[in-house]
Length: 357
Image (cartoon, rainbow, N blue to C red):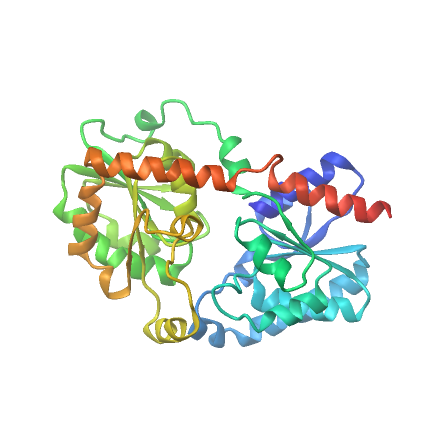
């Protein structure tokens, strides 16, 4: 999504820019020639990555071959640190300018990567307000862009008669449920929430499902009268819902930008959890709480991600006092994320300035 917006911003400045890379349908539609799809890139957790070492090696080999053939003036890396930091090292050894958009979260874990980042990255574009100072102190040329989700939310137009078209009852309070975008996390997050759905017939659950996942990923939710599975309708769901059960990740920030009171949940493979617990040195899991530096929204992770706790904190979101407190914190969040231009425009201008020199 953020890559697609960057591509659009680049082509807006110069329609003759040639862009080639790894990505998905949105980046292709924006104007990039895709040489490797997201289905070969989307891996999460330590155990899962070990299982796909062959695919990861293939990705490296293809990337190197395509870069050598394309001979870019600038290589733009977006997030994805395990892969991209290695690509940055290789690119610099071939005298390619390396720009990184959406920084690795080394402030949470992996601070040893800072020396490599300083060595291999020419310019780093960060999207969280506290990252500018953190990376600058490490000697990395860092630019704060504002958060790219602000652009995506601002450009969203609500679908007319959404509730009617999707047969969503108006006599029940709508609840957004975002279980994730990968099969493994969807299954883990659905398991405790299906009991919450069963125990709250007065609520109607709108399940955000990516079309990239097979229908059987959500089969556990089939048969519930107070559930509607909606594919690729995330922002529509966030607009009409009164509260949300949101998987920790980007969706928590999106929910906040839509002023949706939420409870944050997440479960991972137990071995992955033990590794994460040992390595990660941050107080909060959700972006909302990380940026604000406090628990503005309730986080229920691992053993706390259970039907009883989720149900209790979900129903608390309908209380006026709780909602007003959350709305106040969301306003503070938006003020922290604000910048003079949209993130994609800031990054695109810097890239084009480099190409002109």
